[in-house]
Image 1 (cartoon, rainbow, N blue to C red):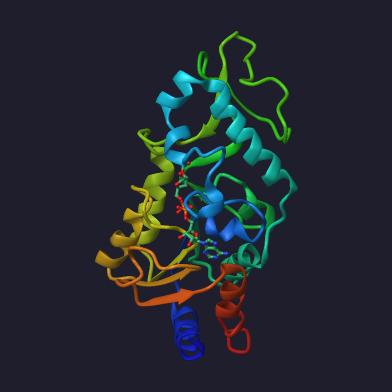
Image 2: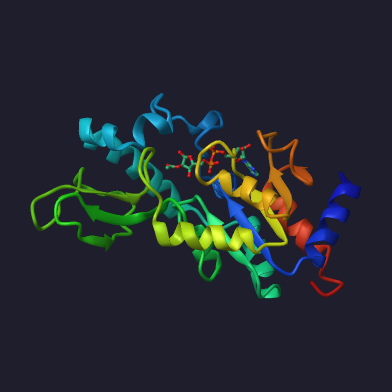
Amino acid sequence: MAETIVTAAELVRQSARITALTGAGISAESGIPTFRDNNGLWRNFRAEDLATPQAFARDPKIVWEWYNWRRSLIAKAEPNPGHYALVTLEQAKPGFTLITQNVDGLHARAGSRDPLLLHGDIWTLRCTGCGDSKQDHTPDLKTLPPVCRCGAIRRPGVVWFGEGLPQDIWRRAEQAVRGADLLLVVGTSAQVYPAAGLIHLAQSSGAKVIEINAAETPVSGTVDFSLRGPSGRILPELIERDKGDSL
Ligand code: OAD
């Protein structure tokens, strides 16, 4: 592993255009449960049972209770060394782009400039009637589901299974990956599409891929380096190793 990380760090140093794709694992060390690890279940529901338009139509209150629970955990959380390492990388590499599936806002709080939010933002409340969108950082919403001034209920401003990704964000993400020399894939199970498709797009566009994950994933065997361990330890190590040289 020590040797592997040295070689992977050399690849980071040599790459001018780096894109990172992050998932729930990067925020795990901030105390936010992932979706598919053991601690990911909430009252025995899977994400796929709750994060859908059908689930919301059936029982908006329970879906909101789940998001309210996640909002209260996120509100208490702080970015961890993994988030900060990506800020360091962004500052060192002008061609850097950060793409995240996370809706927790921790990348921005760490100082990442313009993360591409593929799955939206948990602090945005969108009206299902008039479409009004507003930011609300109250960790524990008192009225569930929240109601808009127009009388209709609001939903979380996130992308659910079966819904399209925000087109402009997706276009920019594809563009960044197509133009990248190196894709860092951090803390994602690489199971949810279209986001996971960006890994295959990078490979078919000729980019190198370094995966950082606590466990093996379906792409581990196909990437150039698969670094196993917590991203809060591995990412700073990968990037710190370059500090002596110029990144
Ligand atoms: P998952 O919960 O599917 O996967 C989390 C990944 O993080 C797993 O592969 C873990 O092994 C890894 N992991 C856990 N702790 C880690 C750590 N400390 N360091 C590094 N890796 C760690 O989360 P995502 O891949 O982000 O979408 O899931 C994708 C989407 O599915 C989410 O954006 C969400 C979810 O349902 C929607 O809600 C639409």
